[in-house]
Length: 264
Ligand code: BTN
Image (cartoon, rainbow, N blue to C red; front, side, top):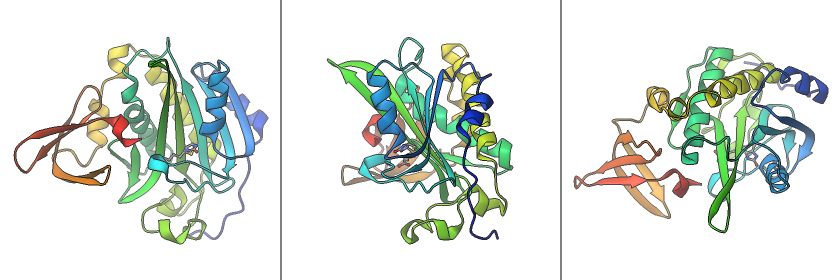
């Protein structure tokens, strides 16, 4: 077990330098403290920032989770960042973005730590039964036309159990808790972004290929319960559609589709 960690903060110049050879990353914004990297990324996207713009914060004072929840983002202990995606570079169904990111991040985490992660539809990454990474994709439309997507990624890296609020301790974990050692966050960021560069420079059909995601998903073929707008659905998670929808076989034999966007 590791003791309370004194975080080593990023040197913004080092971050820029470490990502200089990544052709996916087009601009790097590093902040000591932000309310939410998604909020700043959205502001940048509104003023035309390109696909591959990265916004990273050491700490978020109002980190956002899905479904209006908050995301605990203590200073220097995790990776809290957002990426902008927009046409024409977005050559695949943008509903797939959370799944694609989940797969690549899970693999990057495994490469760095040796920890085998699982993806949970639509966009969580689990280590054992606990969450190690959450992804919040927010899309923007103008006159019903899709404009851009902000993908916010939170990876729990060097927190100890005591760094998590009590209410999260049985649901969340970090790489440090799982392995008993500390990780270089910049190395992990580099690894994640290197994987994204590789994935997003592939042919559209390969970007959208969900076979890797399926391999990392423990719930496929198993019974799951979904809560959508206060309603519960229990059934067998039969498959994932090419648009990233969950195909759930209910007890009465009907097949229900749940789209990723109903989850955000
Ligand atoms: C979830 O699982 O509920 C999604 C959590 C997403 C957290 C990340 S941290 C960086 C980015 N900025 C935010 O405010 N949220 C996302």
